[in-house]
Length: 214
Image (cartoon, rainbow, N blue to C red; front, side):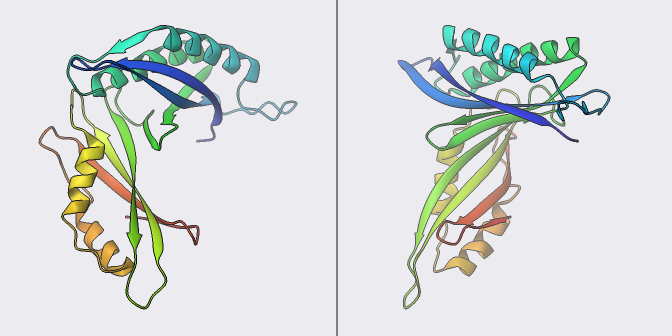
């Protein structure tokens, strides 16, 4: 499905039940497509750009004004509320304009993100956290490897996905790239007690601009 994606920066304030306020800088990317699938031959666009900018501007003002408080120490509940507000507001805007909201991605400046798409239920989200490994095999060129762990969050899960990723990596005995790939394979589908699942792992060799997905 062809989407038109627009991205804006948003500053969001979150608070855990036992912590002080924290500030985050997200880049919100919202994807829309027309219900008819028709592309305007004059503009070459599938949705009205001015409408989308207006919707995102109003959402930005609301999200930056509010404080999102989690009911527990985990910030997952507050992030779920942020996503719910964004999804409901933009879906309502899109419906009135003959457009469909297809996806939302909140990408944080410090290397993690959470997202939703129309194939998921309203309660589901996908969290992506990056981890970095230095591979220094003997008598071979070293590699800096970025691993993106993609977690499918189920409703009400309080799991700390970054911590869970570190825990999984700590259990590996890595001697090189091939060995790393072999050991990562069984991690796909790993399920937390809450029901959240590690959907996939993306492996990027940063010096070579090579990316593999397990």
